[in-house]
Length: 177
Image (cartoon, rainbow, N blue to C red):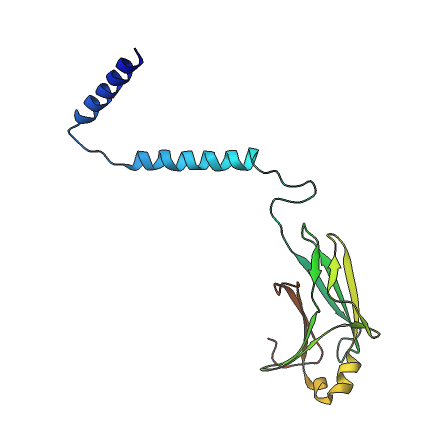
């Protein structure tokens, strides 16, 4: 009984296949394949591996940087604040302090304050880190740095992914760039 049923089904399917005279476009078959793949992916995301509690499905490393100076021109101190606004905790690498004068740049990596090493720094989501930068220390190292018109601070994580840059002008310039 089973064998005859299978043979009848195969004969009917072969008969209908040979009965076609025209070949239509295969676009509908492609749509069915895409639909089946999309349903499989949705089912895998819905019922597959669930993320651990407290860990987001998609990670977003994002920081908000603010750089404030104590005077409008020729500041002595800068206050750097870094706030973790992403949805995961971050490991911050040492900030890069850049003195900028048009095409000439001088770069310094900041280690910490008062001979204490703070970096790499673990910053939890929603927390803020503040660092006071004394520019007189850099000016005593190189007197020419006082002539540089712009100071930038670049923040990156320990995997060298740049998270943000903030800059301030330290002196009057004719050209704003």
